[in-house]
Structures are given as structure tokens and as C-alpha cells.
Length: 441
Ligand SMILES: Cc1ncc(COP(=O)(O)O)c(C=O)c1O
Ligand SMILES: N[C@@H](CCCC[NH3+])C(=O)O
Image (cartoon, rainbow, N blue to C red; front, side):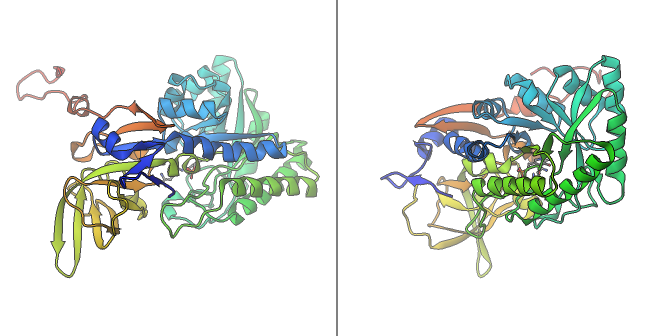
């Protein structure tokens, strides 16, 4: 990841040195370079604008949902993808324009759907037959309508980790194209009085580097759209090709630039619409990781060092799988630096361990760093996506704080959790006592 270092050899983020941030907010600390978030958003938005292609770039807020982040997404003219009541609630709290919110989910509850309908969000991406029936019922009760996209699984096996693959037939998401499931779902939408189907959606997976999977999915969607045009005179206004654009975590990753991803999609949609003589639909995409991933850094303080002669040296930090579960979950790889000694020779190999009582709580197995002493500050790069949003309280560690930096200023946007907050749902249980008694704190 690109970063700057000041003359004292200290890492700077958004014009602020990490020593200042550590002193002010403590560690572990998620730090976001807001300029970088804006740059990523603009790379997508401006590529479509330059070509004059009507498009919506919806930030997939699951990557990092917070009021401040959603306000930045709004400032950058993004739309928003939410997958739960909690993410929708956050968006509403942030004052995000409701018509630009799209809701996803493979098991949306009645409450979730009702909340979306009551909030009058822009669009719901319908995922299964149960949801179609439920949404129809709610719309009838409320005597209103809702724009919907039909989520299909185009049968694409993208090259990424199995747990972040979503476009293959054997998936919990969406309607399968080959078995006729998607046709049945589509006709039930056409018959619906409340649901107004405006187009199709697919998402083939996450952290994808090549464009071939996206292009293949686009072709498959055009084939079905063409069929439905011939059979039902239906013309999709919107083609949502999902997110999943890969980013660089380590030197081994070689993603395309964000403009290249957008350009590739645009030219395939244009090509297909000309070839199939199909009116050009609006292109919607849903990048999450590509907007926030490389804008985030996590700062840790180094603690214990355990050397096992001839095996490895463990260097433990004051966070781990509670603030970044991705290495444990997906074998994800990250880069690390001694953030206040950036110019020193990196001549030691360390296995960077987290604090949890779990052998798998490892952040990096083979980090090259200068000699580290307890108290040193370490920075792990590209932790902006699915770090805070997947953080947890295992071993009752409080969740870390989040700071935004931009143009030399820094601002706390999520407070560090306190122990009172960690135990806030706990109630007393005393044998023979009143089990309903609320704990006071
Ligand atoms: C439907 C949908 N859209 C968008 C995304 C965002 O993916 P990414 O963060 O990889 O861009 C996801 C997550 O994979 C998703 O499931
Ligand atoms: N959370 C995953 C990706 C899944 C995205 C949501 N469909 C990650 O950290 O890579």
C-alpha cells in the first residue's frame, strides 16, 4: 500500500503521523484515510460519468458501516447497499437519501422488509420465493409499491476463497438461472401488484482480480433478459452487476485499477446491448472492499515476544481476531510495518499473534520487521473492509475505536468500547434471588 513517512521515519496517514494518533486514541485503532475513500469512490463514479453512462455506484456498507462512513458515501454521490435492519438503521441515522438505498439479504425478515417499505427505500433485491410472498403481503397491507431487482445466480465460479464465492449455482443467494427457478420468480414478479421489477442483479463473489467472471455474468444476464423481452415484452431498466472488485493486500495481489473494472463492465454492457438489440440498461454496481479496503490501517502496540529456537518467533499485539477475523476465517494475508521506525532495516521475521486464547488467532505468519521491542507501534495495512464490521468481543475484548483522518486533521468517528458497554446486556443471576433483576451499571 502507498504510504508516506515523515522525516523522523514515522508513518503518516492523511497528513497525520501515527504517534499523534496512538497518543490521542490508544491502540488497537482503526484509522481511515478519508481522501483515499473519496478517491476510490470517484474512480468508479467518474468513469461512468465520463462515458455518459447512467449508473449507480452503491457502496456495500457491510464492508464498513458507520454513520460517518455513510455520510462520506453520500458526499461522494454514492448509493448504498444494506443487508439488514441494522445497516438500514445506520443509513437512516446518517441521513442518507432513502431513495438511493438498496436492500439485500437471503433471509429478510418481515420486520426488515417492513422497515424498508416504511422507510420508502429505493429498491429491494429479492432473493427467494419466501421473500417474494412476504413482500407482496406487506405491500398489500401497506397499500403501496416497491421497485425490486431479481437476484440471480449466473453459475459463475469466480477465482476466490470458497466462503466469499456467491455466483455459483450451489449458493444460498438468489435464483438459479439454469433450473428455471429464475423464470418462475420472474413471472411471479410480473403478476405482482405491489412489486415493480426494474431489472436483474447478480454478485459473483468478492476479492476478484480478473474481469472474465464479470463479463461472463453480464453475458448470461443479457441472455435471460433477451428471452424475457421476447416472451413477456419486459425490458430491464437496471442491470446490477454487484461488487467484488479485488484490492491489494500484499505485494502478491495484482488487482486492476478501479477505472479498469468499471470500464470493462461498461464496454461489455454496451457491446451486449448492441449485439442483442436491447435498450441500454442503467448499470449499477456495489463495491464495498474497493471503496474502503485500502483506505484503512490498523495500529497495534507490540507486546510479548516468544522465540522458539529453530521454529519461529511469535510477536503478540494488543488486538487480533477480535478486530480482524479475516486471517483466521479466510487465510487472508496482510502487510505490516513498524510504524514509528519506517526507515530501519527489516531483518527479523516474526509471526504476528493476536491476544485471544486461540492458537488460530494469528494476523500474519511471516512478517519482516526491524527488531521489535514491547511498546513499538505496528501498522497493518488495507484493513478498511470487513475489519471493524466483522469485529467481535471474544474474550470480552472491547471493540477498538475508529478515527478518520483527512488533510492533516483527525476525528474520532466510533468510540472505543468500555467494559461497561461490553457487559451492558448482562443480568444478575443469584440462586434463590430475583433472576429478573436488572444489573445497574
Ligand atoms: C450482494 C453483494 N453486493 C456487494 C458485495 C460487496 O462485495 P465487495 O466488498 O467484495 O465489493 C457483497 C459482498 O460480497 C455482496 O454479497
Ligand atoms: N467478509 C468477506 C467478504 C464477504 C462479502 C459479503 N458478501 C471478507 O472479508 O472478505
